Image (cartoon, rainbow, N blue to C red; front, top):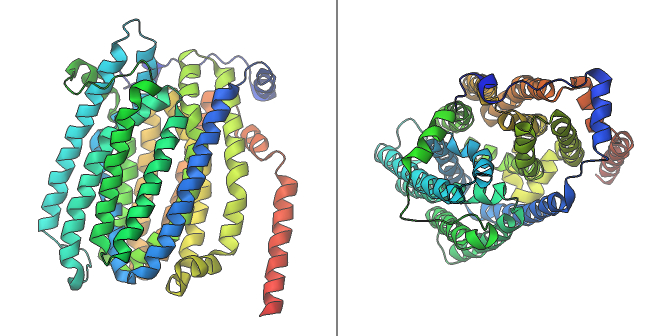
Length: 494
């Protein structure tokens, strides 16, 4: 399958309606097409898992931030964040696995799904091994350009190796998790997530209370990643009847076409993972581990909001893939509008509250040394709002085969973010990096992804915005009044 030209794989939709008629048709279809109890159950499980995960993450972060010295914690966040670039080693294949699994499940050859799954498991494991070698080489060259305090150089070497091993274990887990997603078994994914999150909480507290520090915390992440991989493999066939993991099976003919299709997805991933890497590298080279700690704490809450968006919107990805394969534009547009309304309605109150109360939130949560990161958090919350608009639109492009367009948009946004970081970090530190990321996300990624998705779905931007914010006026007004009242009471008390 060739994605050099989008219309070769997914010919343009026949526009059945336009303007307001299109929106009316979408709304009428909502009475005939329901996502069903399974979709509702999946969303419920996703958010249950998310709430549990965020509770543990935020609580554990507060505990660790108070336990470790600020530069020491900054080093841990810096290395573990840099290692995320190794997810690029999936060559973009993981981004198109769900549609590939959906197609394989419909194939007359019932062994096709198992063949594809087993092949991808071993391919991703091999890609992860290459990552370990890359980071092992970097570890021998430290400190290199990074401003790592000499007292922590030995720990930094070990952290680089352990972080790479975490990615080595996590990459083959992707092949299994996306098989669950293709079968709409988000319940099982989140049940496993609940178990591994609990394990991480227990082990992290245990190692800190017994006197171990950042290297032990990194090893805990490696143990948790291994446990997740094991549980995914054990429960695979009972949860997804068509899937079996055969450890002795590898079929190059399954991998080769996916590598061919994934070249644009790889470019998209490159622009995401590489520019995340660049942001941390710029901060570590032109800033300090102190600035890395401030940025790492400030991004925690905005990242949880981004995860909130992911959990809700990603459930629709297999549905959109099927609608695109059926050339069902009405169903595609209807579900896209519904997801955008859910996402914006769910995230907007947190954006408002987080922006207004950023400094006191950080002081209460992570401690007084992190209060100065309030401005960093405010910019990152603006970026999270832009991400909320862009995420579902990005998935629409992938589901409908417009992977090349998605890749170019993401690449352009990543370049803008990196350039702004280079210009702003030397003068403004973590705040400059956050501002550059937010403005780039809002002006490029959010705008271009949304326009492209609206075109695919046959709706206008005005119709999308009107539908997404419908019914939010009074709740937002009430929230703003409550915020103003809280500010007034705080001024009276002080």
